[in-house]
Length: 248
Image 1 (tube, rainbow, N blue to C red):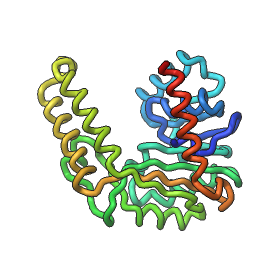
Image 2: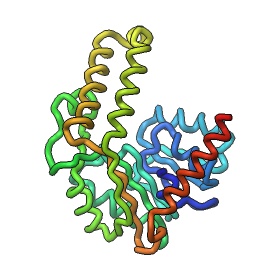
Image 3: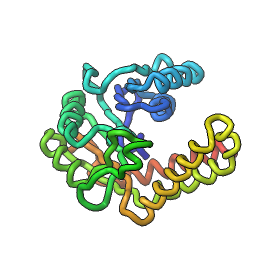
């Protein structure tokens, strides 16, 4: 879905801000034939992502760098960021979106995927801030769109995924519980209790407390993407067909 919203075409230059373990960058390279640059501030993620690129034979198409997104130079046809915006901080939202605008080509498209809240601005839970995501903050849509407006970017699509992440968290918790003894051997009982608590309260926050996921499609021009969302459904159908053939 993210690749479709980016409207990626073969050979296009893609910047993945906060590339994590490299999965999205490798997908865009292998499935969309894009040239992808992924940036991260984690040495562990960098090493792992680079190894995945080598193992996949995609080192000519994907480059991972230990770099702050603000230090990236050049221009890109597509820019994507998944699960990183929660760590930017409200005071840096303007910098984040202005950087995207400056790095994006005139007819480029960007997609920001972030956990968000359905209500107004608030504060980060103290336990989460101390033990899980120091400096993290889940934004309200009003905070994000105001900053986008100031950057000069155009919002071309917003989709709100409501209970999807609740189901993801439930499955993570089930898998964790099935492997709890293995995790305890790697770490300790305190870690296991902390992780269980994190997974449970996170799932509850999506089911009952208004947490959602925002996918915000951005561009510098109004006509950078198709005028209707039909192309998204067509892509899903193609993807389901491809997945069925691969599974068979």
